[in-house]
Image (cartoon, rainbow, N blue to C red; front, top):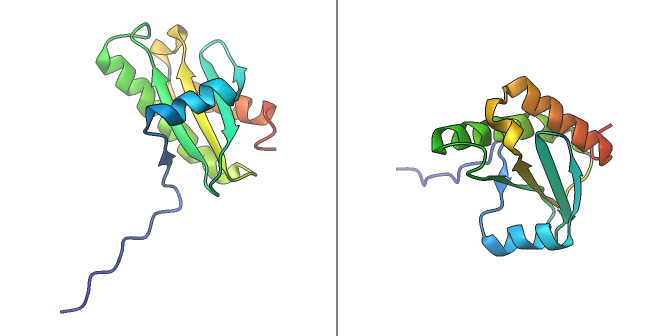
Length: 122
């Protein structure tokens, strides 16, 4: 029997921010950009990978709506991540109240607009 190989991370895998203290570092030390539906906070990290955290408050809607919004932002970021010119940043996406009826196209458009404004993509 051959030894099991370690699974290779797919190129489209998103590295996540999971710990509260990492979110707080981005909130306190990061810079922000915003649209009416989306706020993007970013901060340089000590690693050579980009990490993403998504925050959707109860003001946006009930849990089904919040999870849907999270999935939309996550997928939109995943599709744009290959275009990001810089490595080593922590990104936090905050959904505003208007994001409750968000479509994938709108989420992708908002993120692309914010990443361009922050000069992460050209």
